[in-house]
Image (cartoon, rainbow, N blue to C red):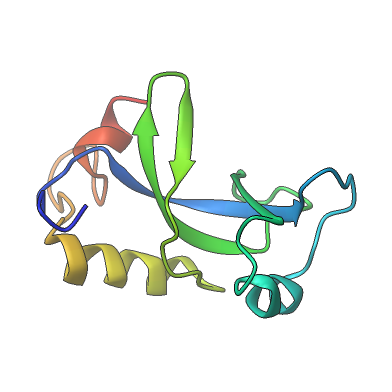
Length: 108
């Protein structure tokens, strides 16, 4: 992903996590410990305020889904947005009716 540093398909969204094949959701501390075993860990898009949302990360928007590609995990949205801005040089609109939204957020 580093080759396309202005990719508007990258979005910051909340996430939830669980072990593959398990129905129980994990907390952020458990996920950070288990990141060393990515094949057993499922990071999925969630929604702000959802009961199982435990943090924020960068997802790539794909047709009918959002893909997690091993990006850093953050407890707060601000950290994930800063990472997106620093790593991919993606900035947010600060004028108009869609303040602070990326192109892909504006078209959800």
